[in-house]
Image 1 (cartoon, helix red, strand yellow):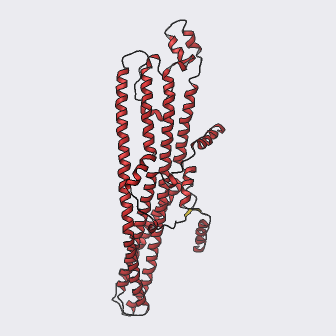
Image 2: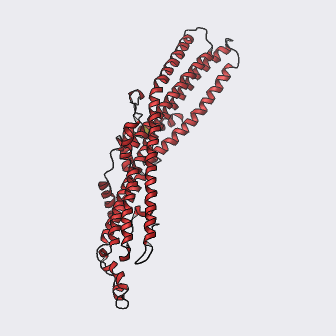
Image 3: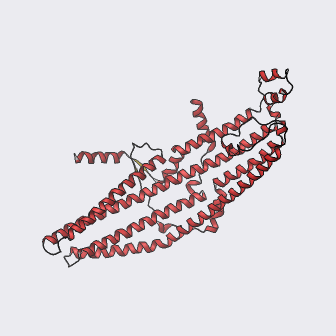
Length: 416
């Protein structure tokens, strides 16, 4: 039975999809659920612009035309049907939609970049957790060997009774840690599969990259924060929203010639609370005051976003650079701990007198230092990924081809 289970595990690993960190960006761009959902929303925004343009063409409503013969006031309403292009508000609304479409594209860039970031950090986290799990398992194997030695010494009267029981308890505690870490690895792997749109029933194995902190170089915050502000899709989206306000002001000024019947589209919800009077009236001044206030608020929010990005980048750079400085020290500590453990092990193998607990403590020191080094490396590459996301660099610099992707979505809609 045990042999059959081992064969099943081997077969699963044999046919499991192998994922490299270089694959994450491509897979997320093509298959991630959130990215594809936002591609659909962007597609809707694009189609809304086309719909608005078409609404500028004449359209005949027979009942409204007939109504002219009964009331001359119906004539203004007929303008919207027979000659909607004569209503200035419609033109301004189309311009608003074009700008909002650009804003939607930048929103898509942000979502796309965030999903790639989540996928890559989950990949790194899984890679380091698997290494930590293997470290725990190696520790258990080593302590089991020491347990047998200690048990033998107790039987020969060379060690006090009860020492092996203490070591056995320590091994049991490590096995509990192993179980918890196995659960953590399984959970992280499930989250990574979801990000990569891999069905839950399929198995994956990750090919851990050969990462070295020693090959990294420090960042200069003052040299890069301008790049972060320049390439941030969040900032670009905010600027597009602010560009909409002058068009709405024009729409309000000419509202006495008729209000637009055209929706602002998918991205226009943030302006739905702006009141625009129909026909002649005295509310235009109030609307303009609201728009000025909204513009001021959005500019303050834009400044807040810029400062948030700068502050976040400054902290990330400080953490990243401090890890570069701290890493050689931790690595040296690990080398020293391994050297001490090896010397104790050699004394034991040569039959020299040795307190077995000195060997256990030396092994613990190796494991603890190794775990510190792994945690430092995991944090370092997680921080590096955050910096690259802020700069929209490397994997984040190759933006999706919107026109091509939207064409594929459009074709799929037509086929449907």
